[in-house]
Length: 324
View 1 (cartoon, rainbow, N blue to C red):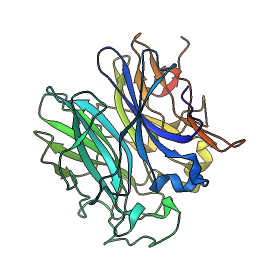
View 2 (view 1 turned 120 degrees about the vertical axis):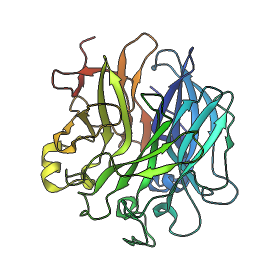
View 3 (view 1 turned 135 degrees about the horizontal axis):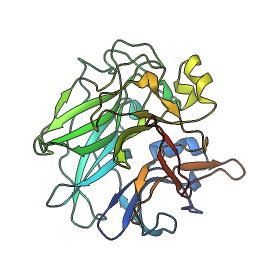
View 4 (view 1 turned 120 degrees about the horizontal axis):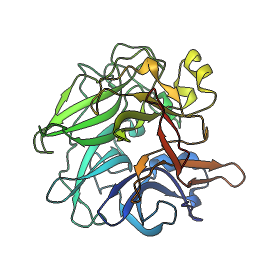
């Protein structure tokens, strides 16, 4: 468990350096008073562990720039080793324009997983209006705290090495251009040969499955089988999908491969812990696979990351609790 008395902590992702698991999590000071304000005050914290239970907090690791596309807050991303150094792709929002509705993808590099240098003062890749909703094509709110009112979504980048050695892929939370609200969630796709120049491609799934957002995407293998795991809040679902959710936010879909394509109509909720949100699936150093996410404690307003829940895939390829 990871819980800080002076900070809210929420969305998280991990990477293994060969000796320890590194946890990167969003954080904001509880002194803000209103937890809703955390989204425009988010930075990245860093902790390490050998068992994903007991965490050594290393403190702040990455935050907004002084100016530019990422000068307001930093949101969820992913980290990978490119063969030479560590690279992090992250979501950024700016103090200019529509603030939380202008979501961009940034990139940074590190030699030690704690001290990061931005690759550029420009986004690594921008939303492509040919395939995905933008503020220009579907204007969203100009003010207010409602994050889910955004018409443009372009965040939570997941970087993957191509399974056949042909460059790299980014999977991005996005909305299909011509789909209805709460039915428009898709997985945007981009490809790069060198992690520097990116080609935005068509989505790896179709809209119309009852999801408005597929947040904190994870495409990985569990016990040798690929699966897609994502988060969607019930408020971002169609009524039909919400009735199926039973209050759950974490979903899984059997996968033909790490790059899909996925049939999201087959998605099922992970019911073992309905309170899990933004739940990364992690291979621990002992070889077991676990899932853990952040929780909200209504008693004192805390946001914290819980203990890992061992998981596996059932006979049909869905995420389920493991007996171990």
